[in-house]
Length: 243
Ligand SMILES: C[S@@+](CC[C@H](N)C(=O)[O-])C[C@H]1O[C@@H](n2cnc3c(N)ncnc32)[C@H](O)[C@@H]1O
Image (tube, rainbow, N blue to C red; front, top):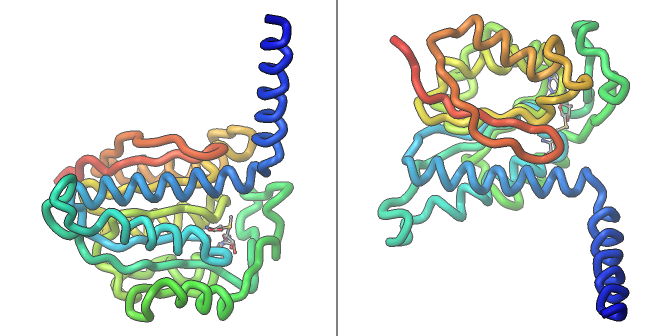
């Protein structure tokens, strides 16, 4: 019995070592990939039409994961899917070389400082091109304050949106992104926020506050909470567009 207990501790100690050695950034990315996979499964099953849009692309990991996820669940299989899923394009918005910029001091955060998380537009495009054909994706370079504010999505060839990933962390650009996509959302669209509980869980800052403001401005859009994922990410389904 004593030997069993000793062995049991040996095993659980190994599990503790293994699990805690995986950096949370990796676990969070895995959670994001799983979330994208489940979301596209749902969207394809429900035949929700529309493109994928990502705000905050960095070096392209989640955009590629979104594409691969959709590919896996969009084929007719005679079991869960009696039809092919809707055709989708993949759009990504990011400042790339410039990284973060604080346009509004309410967004100030110890980690998300100006110039942080900059990436190369050319390298990211090249990386994505290894998975997606040229006519399957579009990257829009620039701060959303310049590329999306008071601009219609049709300017970039966006009509309907089935899944939107908000991954810019800051509140001000998130609200701009939400306003940009609002007329492209359809019933069944999923929107998700990567750092919904940031700013020490504040209800006056970040993505939480942006979405709160957005819902106050757009009371005709009715959302239902869908899924918590990763370290502090939350998603919603647009269940009704009131006339
Ligand atoms: C956490 S990273 C995105 C991670 C990415 N989705 C991935 O798969 O790894 C945040 C990104 O948001 C971008 N960003 C932050 N503020 C922005 C703004 N106002 N306009 C455009 N991009 C912005 C940064 O340049 C950075 O690449």
